[in-house]
Length: 376
Image 1 (spheres, helix red, strand yellow):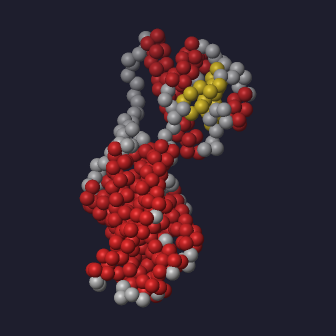
Image 2 (cartoon, rainbow, N blue to C red):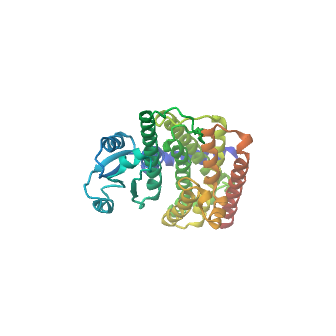
């Protein structure tokens, strides 16, 4: 391999990237825009869930319960209908996502110890929001019910009586505040590297072919390996710069905790870049036009996003679909990134994912180079 020829190819690629405004926008602006949109938009946190409450009891305690619900961070009272038959209409129109019915004998049954029941109706159109909102709402009602029991016990003179109870003390590790941004932003890091790198490398060879310059390069003393390395090294450098930029933004803007090793993080980011470059090279070799390359890039990126565990847990997927995820590099990289950011684990825990990602990256790169040489 002639280093002088390789240096000129690398210089040529950097000059082409610098002179192409579209590439500069893709490299500089697109990752930050995606990070902001996903960081703020792709959240599973439940806030300000609309609740319709029909209070048939109209007691001081029922009114206090309504006030507590409205003042919580999770819920807001959107309607207070007098007729319980209106609750279904409010859920149907989307005015409310939860509906609560307080019966007219609520406090009477609570005081007599017969057991008071509330009617809770949930709009299950959005299963995730419905499940989380219901869980939070039930917990709020349980806490309020405990305070009622303590007050009634004081009034009866039975407060302080020892009653055997089974309690579970909940402790949340690694993401104490249960913020979805702490889980999503590290995943966005992997997706940005994937999208930018595959888009750049996927058009590398096919652009030369369409412009008619590929044949000119092939008749020079330049070797195929030098041509490929000369095109991939600048993209790898850009990908690493993107990685540094995204990590700094995640730590400085979103304040995502990082508990692992930066050396390990960027080392595995480099391995993931090799895998993405291999995928992009495959796309570029198999395409005859830039339009074909863009379609293939889309067909590569979408399964990587959907089946990598970025948004949907792999454990919840059918076995056949779950088996397909083992061939997706992003799956292993997201496990590594989230492990480093949130749990602070190291090689002793992450070595299976690291080994699988490395082998997959080498296989994809070798396949891309092999097909490229065969096509040329």
